[in-house]
Length: 114
Length: 115
Image (cartoon, rainbow over all chains, first blue to last red; front, side, top):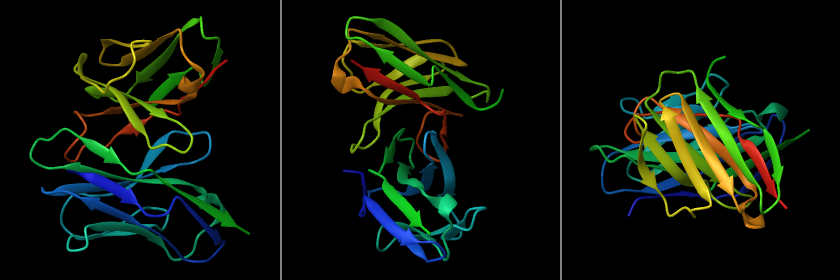
């Protein structure tokens, strides 16, 4: 069965420190991978996505994620976080072959402290 | 306006009230969704509409009734709700049904409190 696991429900970090939010998935077919971010009192918005090609994808605000097929992971990283990165981050997986399903992880709350 | 707009942003209702949540998308998308987001729980997909036809209903109680009159508008009619229905209700849209490379665009949500 397909599933998505975000290993950390909360990640506290100090400003300018590096951070990694972990995401693992299980699937028997090819996948497409997404990270969505939800800032306080807002809906979710797409942060970055992996569809094909280079396994390292980047967002415009300095986040990056690497698709690792052998480890079935899509961890999100940023080398230096800002207070404004405080938000909830959701990993999501969809599947090739016309299977109309998008599965979200439970979310990781990133709290950046000064 | 652009994107996905949800109204009202906040709603407080009693268990015997009838109210509706409204969602409007200005993106020309063909699929629309209702999600429920409760504290400490994963996002729950409630309903999916594709080209105005309901294509998925994830065992949602009948006190929630969706309506999709056209490809730009989606409603969630609420009646005789329970306190455990208090949550953030998110509307989303995508070019085609979720899956594959489709990206969802979410509204800001309607925060519902049932007294």
